[in-house]
Length: 135
Image (cartoon, rainbow, N blue to C red; front, top):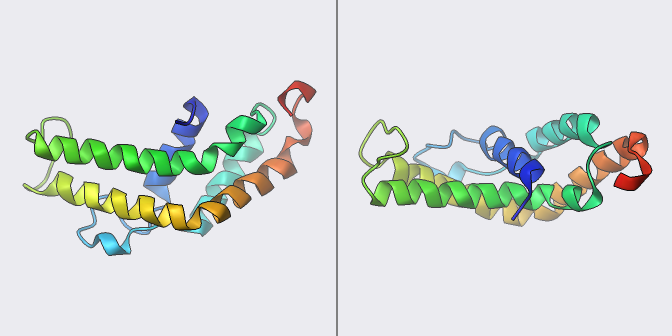
């Protein structure tokens, strides 16, 4: 499981880089947009590379997958237990959300090597300002 840095990064990517809204009824359209992923990783690492350890950086890609799976589970649980946590707009709303997050997570697995390469590239370019003990 990713640390706090990965949790924040992963949740932002899960929400912002999906090709569709998190409650798109056509889950087959869900997936990670690598252009948005790259832009977010670039901005994030430009500001944080100096403070992140290599281990933290190595978990950023998988943190996105982990958060998509976590939200899929939470949406499905809420659907099964009567929609008591997440606000819904229609009866199957949380089920639709869960399916969309599962499709997003599957796409992330396919693109994980690219996601990791993007993070690594950005970190390598910006870490020069990192203190020696973070390298």
